Image 1 (tube, rainbow, N blue to C red):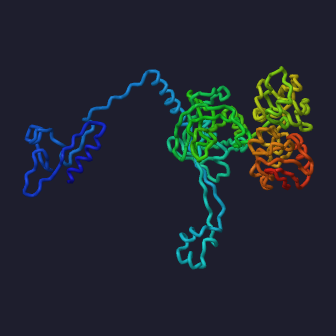
Image 2 (image 1 turned 135 degrees about the horizontal axis):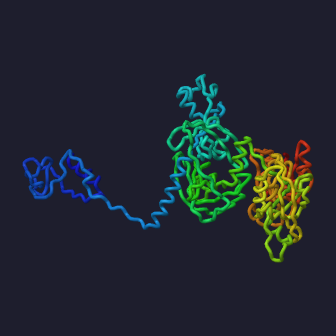
Image 3 (image 1 turned 45 degrees about the vertical axis):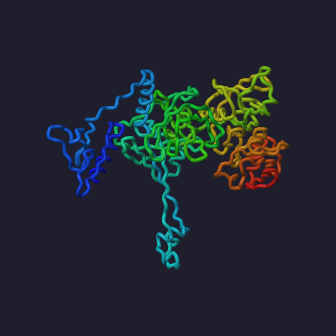
Length: 534
Protein backbone atom coordinates (compact mmCIF):
# COMPACT_ATOMS: atom_id res chain seq x y z
CA UNK A 1 0.00 0.00 0.00
CA UNK A 2 2.92 2.31 0.67
CA UNK A 3 4.04 2.08 -2.98
CA UNK A 4 0.49 2.91 -4.02
CA UNK A 5 0.54 6.09 -2.00
CA UNK A 6 3.93 7.11 -3.38
CA UNK A 7 2.87 6.58 -6.98
CA UNK A 8 -0.40 8.50 -6.56
CA UNK A 9 1.41 11.38 -4.86
CA UNK A 10 4.02 11.49 -7.60
CA UNK A 11 1.35 11.63 -10.27
CA UNK A 12 -0.51 14.39 -8.45
CA UNK A 13 2.67 16.44 -8.42
CA UNK A 14 2.84 16.14 -12.18
CA UNK A 15 -0.74 17.28 -12.88
CA UNK A 16 -0.86 20.14 -15.36
CA UNK A 17 2.73 19.51 -16.52
CA UNK A 18 2.51 16.08 -18.08
CA UNK A 19 -0.09 13.33 -18.41
CA UNK A 20 0.20 10.66 -15.71
CA UNK A 21 -1.43 7.27 -16.12
CA UNK A 22 -2.35 5.40 -12.94
CA UNK A 23 -2.98 1.64 -13.09
CA UNK A 24 -4.41 -0.30 -10.23
CA UNK A 25 -1.74 -1.34 -7.77
CA UNK A 26 -3.02 -4.33 -5.87
CA UNK A 27 -0.99 -6.76 -3.75
CA UNK A 28 -1.62 -10.45 -4.50
CA UNK A 29 -3.58 -12.33 -1.92
CA UNK A 30 -1.96 -15.28 -0.15
CA UNK A 31 -1.84 -18.25 -2.44
CA UNK A 32 -2.96 -16.31 -5.53
CA UNK A 33 -1.08 -15.06 -8.54
CA UNK A 34 -1.16 -11.42 -9.38
CA UNK A 35 -3.37 -10.48 -12.28
CA UNK A 36 -1.27 -9.84 -15.43
CA UNK A 37 -2.92 -6.45 -15.82
CA UNK A 38 -1.88 -5.41 -12.36
CA UNK A 39 1.42 -4.92 -10.66
CA UNK A 40 2.80 -5.68 -7.25
CA UNK A 41 5.41 -3.71 -5.38
CA UNK A 42 8.78 -4.95 -6.56
CA UNK A 43 7.71 -6.05 -10.10
CA UNK A 44 10.43 -5.28 -12.60
CA UNK A 45 10.75 -5.12 -16.37
CA UNK A 46 12.60 -7.59 -18.53
CA UNK A 47 16.26 -6.70 -18.86
CA UNK A 48 16.90 -4.17 -21.60
CA UNK A 49 13.27 -3.89 -22.65
CA UNK A 50 12.26 -0.89 -20.56
CA UNK A 51 8.85 -2.54 -20.12
CA UNK A 52 7.13 -4.91 -17.72
CA UNK A 53 5.58 -8.26 -18.56
CA UNK A 54 2.54 -6.53 -19.95
CA UNK A 55 4.68 -4.69 -22.49
CA UNK A 56 3.68 -1.31 -21.09
CA UNK A 57 6.21 1.38 -20.18
CA UNK A 58 7.70 0.76 -16.77
CA UNK A 59 6.01 2.68 -14.00
CA UNK A 60 7.75 4.64 -11.28
CA UNK A 61 9.34 2.25 -8.83
CA UNK A 62 9.46 2.89 -5.10
CA UNK A 63 12.12 5.39 -4.02
CA UNK A 64 12.72 6.96 -7.45
CA UNK A 65 12.31 10.76 -8.00
CA UNK A 66 10.34 12.43 -10.76
CA UNK A 67 12.71 14.53 -12.83
CA UNK A 68 10.78 17.68 -13.75
CA UNK A 69 13.58 18.78 -16.06
CA UNK A 70 12.65 15.93 -18.37
CA UNK A 71 9.02 17.08 -18.63
CA UNK A 72 7.95 19.18 -21.61
CA UNK A 73 8.04 22.96 -21.01
CA UNK A 74 4.82 24.93 -21.09
CA UNK A 75 4.95 27.42 -23.93
CA UNK A 76 5.03 31.07 -22.79
CA UNK A 77 2.12 33.21 -24.02
CA UNK A 78 3.13 35.97 -26.35
CA UNK A 79 1.70 39.42 -25.65
CA UNK A 80 0.99 41.83 -28.46
CA UNK A 81 3.80 44.46 -28.69
CA UNK A 82 1.55 47.31 -27.52
CA UNK A 83 0.29 45.41 -24.49
CA UNK A 84 3.80 44.25 -23.64
CA UNK A 85 5.05 47.85 -23.69
CA UNK A 86 2.08 48.97 -21.55
CA UNK A 87 2.83 46.27 -19.00
CA UNK A 88 6.48 47.29 -18.95
CA UNK A 89 5.55 50.87 -18.03
CA UNK A 90 3.90 49.67 -14.81
CA UNK A 91 6.79 47.40 -13.93
CA UNK A 92 9.32 50.18 -14.52
CA UNK A 93 7.38 52.64 -12.36
CA UNK A 94 7.06 50.11 -9.53
CA UNK A 95 10.76 49.33 -9.75
CA UNK A 96 11.56 53.01 -9.25
CA UNK A 97 9.20 53.42 -6.33
CA UNK A 98 9.91 50.40 -4.16
CA UNK A 99 13.44 51.41 -2.97
CA UNK A 100 12.21 54.90 -1.97
CA UNK A 101 9.16 53.75 0.03
CA UNK A 102 9.65 52.67 3.64
CA UNK A 103 7.61 50.86 6.28
CA UNK A 104 7.09 52.74 9.55
CA UNK A 105 6.35 51.07 12.88
CA UNK A 106 5.47 53.24 15.88
CA UNK A 107 5.28 52.45 19.58
CA UNK A 108 3.29 54.40 22.15
CA UNK A 109 3.87 53.95 25.88
CA UNK A 110 0.52 54.05 27.62
CA UNK A 111 0.12 54.78 31.32
CA UNK A 112 -0.15 51.83 33.66
CA UNK A 113 -3.73 50.77 34.26
CA UNK A 114 -4.83 49.88 37.76
CA UNK A 115 -8.19 48.51 36.71
CA UNK A 116 -7.13 45.39 34.86
CA UNK A 117 -9.76 42.99 33.65
CA UNK A 118 -10.85 40.00 35.70
CA UNK A 119 -9.66 37.74 32.92
CA UNK A 120 -6.18 39.24 33.13
CA UNK A 121 -6.26 38.75 36.91
CA UNK A 122 -7.02 35.08 36.37
CA UNK A 123 -4.07 34.67 34.00
CA UNK A 124 -1.61 36.72 36.02
CA UNK A 125 -2.47 35.69 39.58
CA UNK A 126 -3.87 32.19 39.25
CA UNK A 127 -7.24 30.62 40.08
CA UNK A 128 -6.97 30.86 43.86
CA UNK A 129 -6.33 34.57 43.75
CA UNK A 130 -9.03 35.06 41.11
CA UNK A 131 -11.79 33.16 42.94
CA UNK A 132 -10.86 33.66 46.59
CA UNK A 133 -9.28 37.14 46.59
CA UNK A 134 -5.71 36.42 47.68
CA UNK A 135 -3.92 39.53 49.00
CA UNK A 136 -1.60 40.14 46.04
CA UNK A 137 -3.46 41.57 43.04
CA UNK A 138 -2.71 43.08 39.70
CA UNK A 139 -4.46 46.26 40.77
CA UNK A 140 -1.75 46.93 43.35
CA UNK A 141 0.95 46.38 40.72
CA UNK A 142 -0.27 48.06 37.53
CA UNK A 143 1.94 47.48 34.52
CA UNK A 144 2.69 49.93 31.71
CA UNK A 145 1.25 49.07 28.32
CA UNK A 146 2.42 49.60 24.77
CA UNK A 147 0.39 50.36 21.69
CA UNK A 148 1.85 49.79 18.24
CA UNK A 149 0.96 51.24 14.87
CA UNK A 150 2.09 50.84 11.30
CA UNK A 151 2.26 53.04 8.24
CA UNK A 152 4.40 54.00 5.30
CA UNK A 153 6.67 56.84 4.21
CA UNK A 154 8.56 58.18 1.20
CA UNK A 155 12.25 59.09 1.21
CA UNK A 156 12.48 62.64 -0.15
CA UNK A 157 16.16 63.34 0.51
CA UNK A 158 19.33 61.23 0.11
CA UNK A 159 20.30 62.40 3.61
CA UNK A 160 17.37 60.57 5.21
CA UNK A 161 14.33 62.87 5.34
CA UNK A 162 11.08 60.91 5.03
CA UNK A 163 7.64 62.29 4.25
CA UNK A 164 4.64 60.60 5.90
CA UNK A 165 1.30 61.33 7.60
CA UNK A 166 1.04 63.02 10.97
CA UNK A 167 -1.35 60.35 12.23
CA UNK A 168 1.27 57.66 11.53
CA UNK A 169 3.83 59.09 13.99
CA UNK A 170 1.84 61.47 16.21
CA UNK A 171 2.70 60.94 19.89
CA UNK A 172 5.01 58.01 19.16
CA UNK A 173 7.65 57.21 21.78
CA UNK A 174 9.63 55.06 19.34
CA UNK A 175 9.65 55.06 15.54
CA UNK A 176 11.24 52.24 13.55
CA UNK A 177 11.82 52.58 9.82
CA UNK A 178 12.39 49.57 7.56
CA UNK A 179 13.88 50.06 4.09
CA UNK A 180 13.30 47.89 1.05
CA UNK A 181 16.47 45.88 1.82
CA UNK A 182 14.92 45.07 5.24
CA UNK A 183 17.47 47.14 7.13
CA UNK A 184 15.96 48.97 10.12
CA UNK A 185 16.67 52.38 11.61
CA UNK A 186 15.29 54.53 14.39
CA UNK A 187 13.44 57.58 13.12
CA UNK A 188 13.20 60.98 14.79
CA UNK A 189 10.41 63.50 14.24
CA UNK A 190 11.55 66.65 12.44
CA UNK A 191 8.14 68.32 12.45
CA UNK A 192 4.41 67.58 12.24
CA UNK A 193 1.39 69.49 10.98
CA UNK A 194 -1.96 68.18 12.21
CA UNK A 195 -4.23 70.44 10.10
CA UNK A 196 -2.81 68.96 6.88
CA UNK A 197 -1.85 65.55 8.35
CA UNK A 198 1.74 65.90 7.11
CA UNK A 199 4.86 64.89 9.05
CA UNK A 200 8.58 64.66 8.33
CA UNK A 201 10.89 62.22 10.10
CA UNK A 202 14.61 61.53 9.63
CA UNK A 203 16.86 58.49 9.83
CA UNK A 204 20.63 58.17 9.95
CA UNK A 205 21.26 55.40 7.46
CA UNK A 206 24.57 53.65 6.84
CA UNK A 207 23.96 53.91 3.11
CA UNK A 208 25.84 56.89 1.71
CA UNK A 209 23.00 57.96 -0.54
CA UNK A 210 19.42 56.85 -0.04
CA UNK A 211 17.11 56.39 -3.07
CA UNK A 212 14.45 59.05 -3.62
CA UNK A 213 11.49 59.66 -5.91
CA UNK A 214 11.30 62.64 -8.26
CA UNK A 215 8.37 64.97 -7.57
CA UNK A 216 5.61 65.29 -10.15
CA UNK A 217 3.12 68.11 -10.73
CA UNK A 218 -0.15 67.15 -9.05
CA UNK A 219 -1.83 70.31 -10.36
CA UNK A 220 -1.60 68.94 -13.90
CA UNK A 221 -3.19 65.56 -13.14
CA UNK A 222 -6.17 64.53 -15.25
CA UNK A 223 -9.06 62.38 -14.13
CA UNK A 224 -8.63 58.91 -15.61
CA UNK A 225 -4.82 58.84 -15.50
CA UNK A 226 -3.23 55.60 -14.30
CA UNK A 227 -1.50 55.68 -10.91
CA UNK A 228 0.31 53.30 -8.56
CA UNK A 229 -0.02 53.16 -4.76
CA UNK A 230 2.98 51.78 -2.86
CA UNK A 231 3.03 51.12 0.88
CA UNK A 232 2.85 48.79 3.86
CA UNK A 233 -0.78 47.60 4.13
CA UNK A 234 -1.36 45.30 7.10
CA UNK A 235 2.43 45.07 7.49
CA UNK A 236 2.92 43.64 3.98
CA UNK A 237 5.80 45.90 3.04
CA UNK A 238 6.26 47.41 -0.43
CA UNK A 239 2.91 46.31 -1.77
CA UNK A 240 2.10 47.86 -5.16
CA UNK A 241 -1.47 48.39 -6.39
CA UNK A 242 -2.80 50.18 -9.44
CA UNK A 243 -5.80 52.31 -10.32
CA UNK A 244 -6.75 55.64 -11.82
CA UNK A 245 -7.34 59.20 -10.68
CA UNK A 246 -11.05 59.07 -9.83
CA UNK A 247 -11.45 62.74 -8.87
CA UNK A 248 -9.48 65.86 -7.91
CA UNK A 249 -9.98 68.55 -5.31
CA UNK A 250 -12.03 66.40 -2.94
CA UNK A 251 -13.05 68.38 0.15
CA UNK A 252 -15.55 68.41 3.03
CA UNK A 253 -14.60 64.86 3.98
CA UNK A 254 -13.93 65.85 7.59
CA UNK A 255 -10.48 64.22 7.50
CA UNK A 256 -8.26 67.32 7.69
CA UNK A 257 -8.69 71.06 8.20
CA UNK A 258 -7.01 71.67 4.84
CA UNK A 259 -8.32 69.37 2.13
CA UNK A 260 -7.67 69.16 -1.57
CA UNK A 261 -7.51 65.39 -1.94
CA UNK A 262 -6.73 63.30 -4.96
CA UNK A 263 -9.26 60.46 -5.07
CA UNK A 264 -8.12 57.13 -6.48
CA UNK A 265 -9.43 53.59 -6.78
CA UNK A 266 -5.97 52.08 -6.36
CA UNK A 267 -6.26 49.73 -3.38
CA UNK A 268 -5.32 51.55 -0.15
CA UNK A 269 -5.66 49.76 3.19
CA UNK A 270 -4.63 50.30 6.82
CA UNK A 271 -0.85 50.64 6.80
CA UNK A 272 -0.77 52.45 3.44
CA UNK A 273 -0.98 55.85 5.16
CA UNK A 274 2.06 57.95 4.32
CA UNK A 275 2.94 55.86 1.27
CA UNK A 276 3.46 56.97 -2.31
CA UNK A 277 0.88 57.70 -4.97
CA UNK A 278 2.80 57.99 -8.22
CA UNK A 279 2.21 58.37 -11.92
CA UNK A 280 3.47 56.02 -14.62
CA UNK A 281 6.53 58.20 -15.12
CA UNK A 282 7.71 57.17 -11.67
CA UNK A 283 7.03 60.59 -10.12
CA UNK A 284 5.56 61.19 -6.67
CA UNK A 285 2.23 62.99 -7.04
CA UNK A 286 0.60 62.37 -3.66
CA UNK A 287 0.80 60.95 -0.15
CA UNK A 288 -1.80 58.28 0.55
CA UNK A 289 -3.76 59.34 3.61
CA UNK A 290 -7.21 57.85 4.11
CA UNK A 291 -9.95 55.65 2.73
CA UNK A 292 -13.71 55.83 2.67
CA UNK A 293 -14.92 52.52 4.03
CA UNK A 294 -17.84 50.99 5.87
CA UNK A 295 -15.82 47.87 6.68
CA UNK A 296 -12.41 49.27 7.66
CA UNK A 297 -10.82 47.91 4.48
CA UNK A 298 -10.56 48.83 0.81
CA UNK A 299 -13.83 49.71 -0.93
CA UNK A 300 -12.53 51.51 -4.00
CA UNK A 301 -12.26 55.05 -2.58
CA UNK A 302 -8.92 56.31 -1.34
CA UNK A 303 -7.58 59.82 -0.72
CA UNK A 304 -4.08 61.23 -1.16
CA UNK A 305 -2.64 64.65 -0.30
CA UNK A 306 -1.40 66.32 -3.51
CA UNK A 307 2.36 66.75 -3.59
CA UNK A 308 1.87 70.40 -4.56
CA UNK A 309 0.35 70.98 -1.11
CA UNK A 310 2.71 68.66 0.77
CA UNK A 311 5.83 70.22 -0.78
CA UNK A 312 5.47 73.65 0.83
CA UNK A 313 4.48 72.17 4.19
CA UNK A 314 7.44 69.79 4.09
CA UNK A 315 9.87 72.62 3.37
CA UNK A 316 8.51 74.58 6.35
CA UNK A 317 8.82 71.58 8.66
CA UNK A 318 12.41 70.85 7.66
CA UNK A 319 13.47 74.50 7.85
CA UNK A 320 11.49 75.71 10.89
CA UNK A 321 9.97 72.65 12.51
CA UNK A 322 6.50 74.16 12.04
CA UNK A 323 4.25 75.40 9.25
CA UNK A 324 3.75 79.10 8.56
CA UNK A 325 0.49 79.92 6.79
CA UNK A 326 -0.91 83.06 5.25
CA UNK A 327 -3.99 84.85 6.60
CA UNK A 328 -6.38 87.19 4.82
CA UNK A 329 -8.96 87.83 7.56
CA UNK A 330 -12.34 86.98 6.09
CA UNK A 331 -15.06 84.53 7.01
CA UNK A 332 -16.16 82.68 3.90
CA UNK A 333 -18.77 80.22 2.74
CA UNK A 334 -19.76 78.40 -0.44
CA UNK A 335 -21.68 80.13 -3.19
CA UNK A 336 -24.49 77.58 -2.84
CA UNK A 337 -27.92 77.59 -4.40
CA UNK A 338 -29.57 79.88 -1.85
CA UNK A 339 -26.76 82.42 -1.71
CA UNK A 340 -26.14 82.39 -5.45
CA UNK A 341 -29.74 83.32 -6.12
CA UNK A 342 -29.24 86.65 -4.34
CA UNK A 343 -25.94 87.51 -6.05
CA UNK A 344 -25.68 89.53 -9.23
CA UNK A 345 -23.26 88.00 -11.78
CA UNK A 346 -20.94 90.07 -13.96
CA UNK A 347 -22.82 88.80 -17.03
CA UNK A 348 -26.49 87.95 -17.25
CA UNK A 349 -27.00 84.21 -16.88
CA UNK A 350 -23.37 83.57 -15.91
CA UNK A 351 -22.66 81.21 -12.99
CA UNK A 352 -20.77 82.74 -10.09
CA UNK A 353 -17.89 80.63 -8.83
CA UNK A 354 -15.69 81.52 -5.88
CA UNK A 355 -15.85 82.11 -2.13
CA UNK A 356 -18.57 84.31 -0.63
CA UNK A 357 -17.31 86.72 2.05
CA UNK A 358 -19.56 86.47 5.11
CA UNK A 359 -17.53 88.86 7.25
CA UNK A 360 -14.30 90.86 7.39
CA UNK A 361 -12.10 90.96 10.50
CA UNK A 362 -11.29 94.53 11.63
CA UNK A 363 -7.67 95.47 10.99
CA UNK A 364 -7.08 92.45 8.77
CA UNK A 365 -5.39 92.45 5.34
CA UNK A 366 -8.85 91.99 3.81
CA UNK A 367 -10.22 95.13 5.49
CA UNK A 368 -7.14 97.14 4.55
CA UNK A 369 -7.57 96.08 0.93
CA UNK A 370 -11.23 97.15 0.87
CA UNK A 371 -13.07 93.80 0.83
CA UNK A 372 -16.64 93.82 2.12
CA UNK A 373 -19.28 91.37 3.24
CA UNK A 374 -21.11 90.00 0.20
CA UNK A 375 -18.06 90.10 -2.09
CA UNK A 376 -17.29 86.90 -4.00
CA UNK A 377 -13.55 86.24 -4.24
CA UNK A 378 -12.94 84.78 -7.68
CA UNK A 379 -9.17 84.98 -8.10
CA UNK A 380 -6.01 85.13 -5.95
CA UNK A 381 -2.97 86.12 -7.98
CA UNK A 382 -3.22 84.28 -11.28
CA UNK A 383 -5.23 81.39 -9.85
CA UNK A 384 -9.00 81.11 -10.18
CA UNK A 385 -10.88 80.32 -6.97
CA UNK A 386 -13.38 77.50 -7.42
CA UNK A 387 -14.99 77.57 -3.98
CA UNK A 388 -14.44 78.41 -0.30
CA UNK A 389 -12.21 75.39 0.30
CA UNK A 390 -10.02 76.39 -2.63
CA UNK A 391 -9.55 79.88 -1.16
CA UNK A 392 -8.67 78.37 2.22
CA UNK A 393 -5.89 76.30 0.69
CA UNK A 394 -4.57 79.05 -1.58
CA UNK A 395 -4.29 81.66 1.18
CA UNK A 396 -2.74 79.17 3.60
CA UNK A 397 0.06 78.39 1.13
CA UNK A 398 1.01 82.06 0.71
CA UNK A 399 4.03 83.44 2.53
CA UNK A 400 3.33 86.08 5.21
CA UNK A 401 4.15 89.68 4.09
CA UNK A 402 3.73 88.60 0.49
CA UNK A 403 1.79 91.07 -1.70
CA UNK A 404 -1.05 89.46 -3.60
CA UNK A 405 -3.76 90.62 -5.99
CA UNK A 406 -7.34 89.59 -5.19
CA UNK A 407 -10.20 89.78 -7.65
CA UNK A 408 -13.81 89.94 -6.46
CA UNK A 409 -17.29 90.33 -7.87
CA UNK A 410 -19.41 92.96 -6.12
CA UNK A 411 -22.95 93.65 -7.30
CA UNK A 412 -22.10 92.40 -10.78
CA UNK A 413 -18.89 94.46 -11.05
CA UNK A 414 -15.42 92.91 -11.17
CA UNK A 415 -12.98 94.67 -8.80
CA UNK A 416 -9.26 94.16 -8.21
CA UNK A 417 -7.54 94.71 -4.87
CA UNK A 418 -3.99 94.34 -3.63
CA UNK A 419 -2.97 93.52 -0.08
CA UNK A 420 -0.14 92.13 2.00
CA UNK A 421 -0.86 88.70 3.49
CA UNK A 422 -0.42 88.38 7.27
CA UNK A 423 0.80 85.41 9.28
CA UNK A 424 -1.94 83.10 10.44
CA UNK A 425 -2.42 82.82 14.18
CA UNK A 426 -3.71 79.37 15.12
CA UNK A 427 -6.25 81.00 17.43
CA UNK A 428 -7.88 82.53 14.36
CA UNK A 429 -8.50 79.27 12.63
CA UNK A 430 -12.17 78.50 12.30
CA UNK A 431 -11.17 75.19 10.85
CA UNK A 432 -13.94 74.31 8.47
CA UNK A 433 -14.95 74.57 4.90
CA UNK A 434 -18.03 76.68 4.29
CA UNK A 435 -17.67 79.20 7.12
CA UNK A 436 -14.65 80.61 8.90
CA UNK A 437 -12.51 78.50 6.61
CA UNK A 438 -9.95 81.24 6.02
CA UNK A 439 -9.49 81.94 9.71
CA UNK A 440 -11.62 85.03 10.11
CA UNK A 441 -12.68 84.69 13.74
CA UNK A 442 -10.18 85.18 16.55
CA UNK A 443 -11.81 82.35 18.49
CA UNK A 444 -14.44 79.77 17.55
CA UNK A 445 -13.95 77.29 20.39
CA UNK A 446 -13.36 74.51 17.83
CA UNK A 447 -16.67 75.04 16.05
CA UNK A 448 -17.15 75.12 12.31
CA UNK A 449 -20.43 76.58 11.08
CA UNK A 450 -22.22 77.40 7.85
CA UNK A 451 -25.24 79.41 6.75
CA UNK A 452 -28.48 77.42 6.78
CA UNK A 453 -29.18 76.11 3.30
CA UNK A 454 -31.47 73.63 1.63
CA UNK A 455 -28.61 71.18 1.23
CA UNK A 456 -27.71 71.31 4.93
CA UNK A 457 -31.34 70.90 5.95
CA UNK A 458 -31.49 67.71 3.91
CA UNK A 459 -28.11 66.48 5.17
CA UNK A 460 -28.91 66.89 8.87
CA UNK A 461 -32.68 66.41 8.75
CA UNK A 462 -33.41 69.96 9.94
CA UNK A 463 -36.86 71.49 10.08
CA UNK A 464 -37.64 72.95 6.65
CA UNK A 465 -39.09 76.07 8.26
CA UNK A 466 -35.83 76.82 10.11
CA UNK A 467 -34.51 80.17 8.84
CA UNK A 468 -32.20 81.74 11.42
CA UNK A 469 -29.00 80.59 13.05
CA UNK A 470 -25.91 78.76 11.79
CA UNK A 471 -25.43 75.02 11.31
CA UNK A 472 -22.53 73.25 13.04
CA UNK A 473 -20.79 71.25 10.31
CA UNK A 474 -17.70 70.16 12.28
CA UNK A 475 -16.47 70.05 15.88
CA UNK A 476 -12.81 69.79 16.84
CA UNK A 477 -12.66 66.74 19.16
CA UNK A 478 -10.04 68.46 21.35
CA UNK A 479 -11.98 71.71 21.75
CA UNK A 480 -14.15 73.44 24.34
CA UNK A 481 -17.14 72.87 22.07
CA UNK A 482 -16.59 69.10 22.14
CA UNK A 483 -16.30 69.20 25.93
CA UNK A 484 -19.64 71.04 26.07
CA UNK A 485 -21.18 68.30 23.87
CA UNK A 486 -21.91 70.50 20.86
CA UNK A 487 -22.69 68.16 17.98
CA UNK A 488 -22.48 68.30 14.21
CA UNK A 489 -25.94 69.21 12.90
CA UNK A 490 -26.79 71.48 15.85
CA UNK A 491 -28.17 74.91 14.90
CA UNK A 492 -26.72 77.76 16.99
CA UNK A 493 -29.33 80.49 17.46
CA UNK A 494 -27.62 82.74 20.01
CA UNK A 495 -24.16 83.42 21.45
CA UNK A 496 -24.34 85.02 24.92
CA UNK A 497 -27.94 86.08 24.24
CA UNK A 498 -26.97 87.71 20.93
CA UNK A 499 -28.84 86.34 17.90
CA UNK A 500 -26.72 84.99 15.05
CA UNK A 501 -28.06 84.74 11.51
CA UNK A 502 -24.99 83.85 9.46
CA UNK A 503 -21.30 82.93 9.85
CA UNK A 504 -20.33 86.61 9.90
CA UNK A 505 -22.53 87.54 12.88
CA UNK A 506 -21.50 84.29 14.56
CA UNK A 507 -17.82 85.24 14.20
CA UNK A 508 -18.48 88.71 15.65
CA UNK A 509 -20.51 87.33 18.55
CA UNK A 510 -17.86 84.71 19.35
CA UNK A 511 -15.14 87.36 19.28
CA UNK A 512 -17.03 89.43 21.86
CA UNK A 513 -18.02 86.42 23.96
CA UNK A 514 -14.45 85.09 24.09
CA UNK A 515 -13.47 88.09 26.24
CA UNK A 516 -15.33 86.51 29.16
CA UNK A 517 -14.81 83.24 30.97
CA UNK A 518 -17.95 81.49 29.74
CA UNK A 519 -19.83 81.39 26.45
CA UNK A 520 -23.54 80.55 26.52
CA UNK A 521 -24.95 79.02 23.34
CA UNK A 522 -28.61 78.61 22.52
CA UNK A 523 -28.83 75.52 20.32
CA UNK A 524 -31.66 73.98 18.34
CA UNK A 525 -31.15 70.22 18.30
CA UNK A 526 -33.70 68.15 16.41
CA UNK A 527 -36.40 70.74 17.03
CA UNK A 528 -35.69 71.28 20.74
CA UNK A 529 -33.92 74.34 22.12
CA UNK A 530 -31.22 73.87 24.74
CA UNK A 531 -28.48 75.97 26.36
CA UNK A 532 -24.87 74.78 26.32
CA UNK A 533 -21.99 76.46 28.16
CA UNK A 534 -18.46 76.56 26.77
